[in-house]
Image (tube, rainbow, N blue to C red; front, top):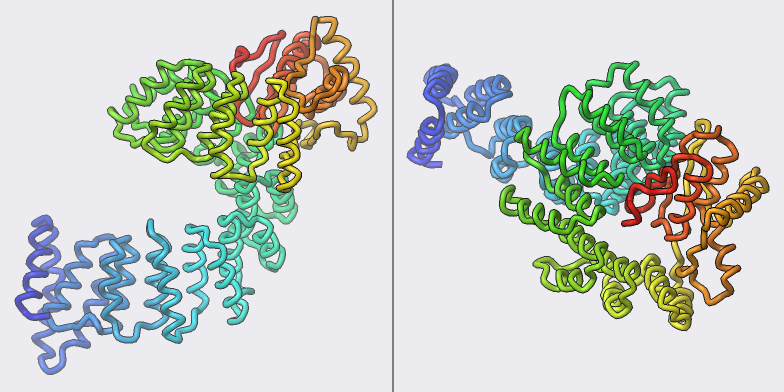
Length: 622
């Protein structure tokens, strides 16, 4: 660099800094100038040494880093100097300065060593754009530089953020070839990578191979199961962790609470809450947010409110969790009141907050309010609507019976509608009996997600409701031909530290004989209350009596019968179902709550139903 250019760099950096800091930095660097005067014959090694010493002292100031860099340039230290470049890059990455700055220096270093490569990979892995870390890793291999023990944790972190499992598998193979797979920090990184990429089984296999399992490893595999739809496995591992004497931390408890929330295991979640209080994690914001989410997802909105009110620190996630919890539990007006309170606190709602607000409007039939909030989201908060927000608006119109308006809304959306949007319309058509638009929605879904079993079921329900039995059979034949299998319905209930799962017509439980006797008793008592089975959506042209029998064996009814046998009178019953509750089960459970004087909470795929004294919190609008 010419002297006039280096002078410009130095003076520019000084000009755009505070006078005090500039003065201090000039004093800080004066010794370097004196050093150059002392060693006039070959001052570069001494200047480099002194610059490196000063770099180690500027761990909290990007400004000082740039001052030292400018000084080195001005005094003829080339960027290609490997020692100077190495320490500059390390300091840039440690200060979270822009990686473009580090890349500029890295590109001029002659023969960077493994430490410098690792630092660059680490910097990109910790940045918002981790993909260059993988590119650098490939370049390192092309330069015949073998990765060392520090390379793998950094590169696997980048892979985990990108969920690029194929790249991760290649890196795993190389770590085995180089003999590093047995090192605990490499193993921890591999467990985390597979879990983050959605391969919980691979994470568990890696975990099983570990001889020394530290808390990081346990947390990674438990969280992997919790996040990948395997909550039972997460709870099993948590129990094993306790047996091995490993003490959980806040991260562990967040994963545990997530698993309990997914299963609807309220009793277990409550015990986890007691344990959290015992070990002093009740002030942890993330743990409290997870507790709040647990109670909301288990249908215990009163306890969720209590956690929220007792939190010393709250963030937007806390407010959003409770708003969404109120919305899915059928308390739409309360959710909107809480949103107003959030605004009074002068907090800025997030995109997800507005998803909760729009969901509340949708599930409570507040069409005008929904459009008002959608407009405010854009105009007042500058949030660009995402496909989730447009999906809520389609759902808002569809649920209220405005199916044609919902279709027109989709046609005029500025974003390309995805399968979820079209499926929302198909569901609305099924509820409100619009066969023509239902077939239009199905045609779109065939192009976007042709193998989704739920779409076939929705279309079959629509045909069955219109008594188009030949079309029902046609849909079934297509499913058989194309190998599409209907997602089996199941219901979960918690009893005595265990979660029990029941499927339609389930006879695997040891108490099956008693359960079916209770189902017969339930049917008898409900008919005395005027119950008439809702057989419209039974997907076959069969006799009404056969349809009634089929409806009697739905998984949620079996689960409720099991709980009526095994719990004391008056005990609330909580059921988690993976599919949307059918109209007949909804009607039957309302009457069961009245006849047996039980509060029954059912969480289906889309919302909660709180049944009590023969009525439901959804007011038959779901």
